[in-house]
Image (cartoon, rainbow, N blue to C red; front, side):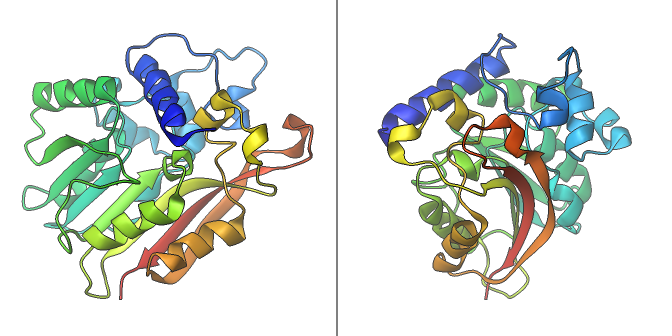
Length: 261
């Protein structure tokens, strides 16, 4: 399937999520997505993913969409004054949580390619006076709109698997991070036990972060190929088990940390 066609489908579907429209694909773990009633709140989904209930209450409800496959900020060890970039920032959940951790001396920049998400996040940010947060439009596998060697931390929550070229995305992340031995990338993402061939790709399953997932070996190799060192998997758990797929594959969520040299 053509890369540009996939991107347009992703923007369309996540634009609809931003507008609170009904969607015909699932982008949540099996405990939420596949429940019998499917009557579960966005905050409950976020709790299942790994967000702290107290923290969720500290940010605007509009920023919590129940998306993602982990909570990368739990592993970021943010410090006052640091600059953090959130790739695929959506309605701003991680950006707003991070803003409190980096403080007034720090800065948070959310990057998203979906206009509706950016509009939603910006409105929430202005209404709630997040002075150290801004949101920019960008395609993370083409060019992240951030200067070289300029930030301490990059996070992303279940977004890189939506890209067609993971290595290009990781190269862009490596480019914007400072090369000081402490600048770090913390990514929550999905991997698979069996990759899907081009002919088997389903657009909705790609938008659900499933068909675009790499195996663990290939995912970690794409990070290495971008220049990162000291790559570590911090957390790993089943996202969707083999009962959900005819081919017996399993989808696993991971938290990966990598350091620049």
